[in-house]
Image (cartoon, rainbow, N blue to C red):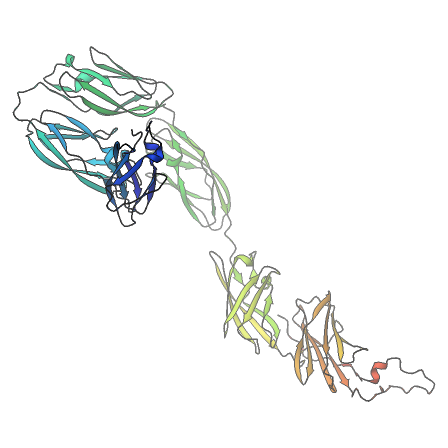
Length: 625
């Protein structure tokens, strides 16, 4: 025998489900593996039956509809039983499905309630209780779907005639998707002697307060030839309500506890001998009793705005409770430097500030209605000074050496006011493409051209924040890097130390007592100028090195350049004369040594002669910014 065989199953197009058939049959004489199963009725659906008696039902991705599958099980003796499974395959677009409805046959003086529409409806996204049902309105038939059970009740009217009818049943889900199906009716019978009947009229929804009771008379909803005392009454079991029906007067008394409030559906059923049952379902609402509270004004929020601004964010109606706020009239008191207006219709507060005043004012807002109710609240208004204006220095002069491809600029040289340069948007525009970015590591603006600077250029800089934009100009004054410009000073020196073990290798040191913003430029000329990399040894001292070519002879010029914090160009240069390494060369002495003087203790000069002389100070001085 079958146990718990399903009647319906739903899935989405392209989906599948599995039935374990062993769970659906009980045979005391045979084991599960001796039973044989067959499945028929599939058209678009694909059915796979495994050796373990698991049935997999698959729907093609492009199929939506309803099919009925017949599952048949037989034991070794040939005895069999079967059940039908209604399989819904719903489209992914969300439309509901209605399976084909069975034909309903009933006498014209009868009532049919055999169709439970829950068995024939499927929707991927919604329960059948969420569906809205649409039935044709006819004079000869009454069609009604119970909102709780979704059972279709068909009642032929006095004008009904025997014959066949086709009616359209239409449903709609909460998303507006619809589906329809044909309902076929076969009415039997002919002219029958009149039978006393009655009609149970709908009961309108009602409610009562928590802890109270409600009484009404069921006889008020009965119409017809049947006397009221021949009608018996029952009702569906309530969940939260206490229901009492007087068997003689048919008065209903409803009550509830003080703890529960909400909505509950209750169905009342009327019966008379020889007549079909009639029922009506009514929603009953149990309300929480309304407690009348005095008018109240909640604490008003503090308003903050800038000098010269206008604020109308405060709607007093939002803070009035326990009374209709539209009945109140408002006035403000206490303003001295502010203009306050309260709209008489909307009760919105308009605050107008003076551009030249900032501070705090405390106002008293008073509202009154025609019943004499009075509301009073305190409103604090803080007016802050206007934000600083974003400005850039009109012209900023920055000297750089020819060939440099980067300017690192402290934003304080450009910005006037307390602005975070990292929060600003920067742009640079010159005679060629130029980029500007903020380096958060050292807090500098980095300006780079498409090609290194060889001539002076005026660069337009733009800085923006959420509300401001400022424009300034940067004068990049290009200074020659060949030593023709600059002044010498004891605060900036270049020192050259030959290597006694390797005469071709020299060490160079740049010493500065000024606080330089960047490393100095160190250059060496062996026919053409080349730039030597420098490494910071200790604050104020940079080191570099260079290996001369093995056959190098003649003069080697070395030049150190920098721009001090006062934008002065400083230089220090050395000239090294190199003799042939193959012939010892004695360094000429300024004063001849006496014959008995000691020999030269620096043997390296016998191989390389290095006459080092510092160039004379240049008369040129770069102007300050």
